[in-house]
Image 1 (tube, rainbow, N blue to C red):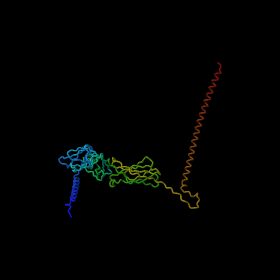
Image 2: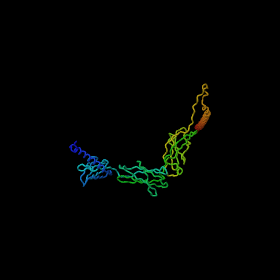
Image 3: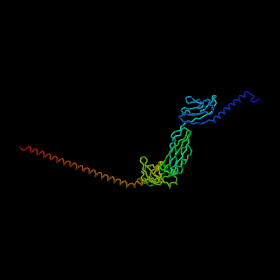
Image 4: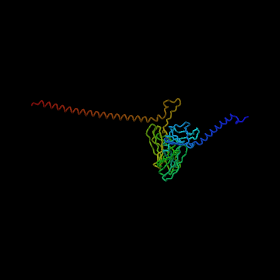
Length: 398
């Protein structure tokens, strides 16, 4: 059997395999030397071909296509983008005159770090949570360094959880420190920028809303409701003795736009005494640190709805067969008979008062008419006397 090398066809196969292996090695090598370069949007960005020698001419390609001359300038193996835009991002490759790949550069464009918006919340005396958001999107991989300090000037780290959220926490802060400085530094491949948040620690304290708000009826009291709640979970039990909370409870019947409010000190229950009988009510509670007058009130708790106690009316039971229908009325109907007589007496008294009022009005009216008649009568008599006098005077001879 002849060997593969002695056969012309075998030599061709070996040549193809060799060329293919060289190409694979070239791709592996170029992937190893590939680089990522970052540039600023709207600026001039220069890419340098690291594989060129002695300023030999090279060809630049973007994602496999030749770079258009109006987009960039090529000089001694370097490519300069005149006004970088997002459309210029991608994989740039440089090739020698024979088309051999020399280097691949992945270009990413974005903005330099900018200021961030920082907000901090203090749900209790043992913890501070600060979070931040970008005020300008950089389009580049970004990381943050967070720290805090008080008036002592000692800088401590604000611990980040690195769970994908821009948030850090401060444990056991000095509650006697009036001022709090939180610094967040934004870092990306184009540089860094720091933002400082200045806060008044006592004014930042804002408890979470009260939890487990429940409302129960008070038996026999149609205008009362008993409201109970618990301290927020973020306000531990061991803290309540040293730092109690004050509460405000508000309530209203459904359909009303006006709330009634009650203030409660250091207790977690209250009885509403003036609920509207027979109506469904909405109840909410909020909290504030009892010792820190500068602290904020919490948000209102979830709305709880309840109706005061109402008397249940028993349905009349069926009487045994043979008892006359007259005796089958419930006893409750006889209990209302005194009320019916009282209503009748009240109606009779009202009719008497109306009759007296009408009689007085008629008497007054008749008196006025009589006075007017007497007055008119006197005027007529005076006129008659004057006419008589004038007639007598005319009859006297001159």
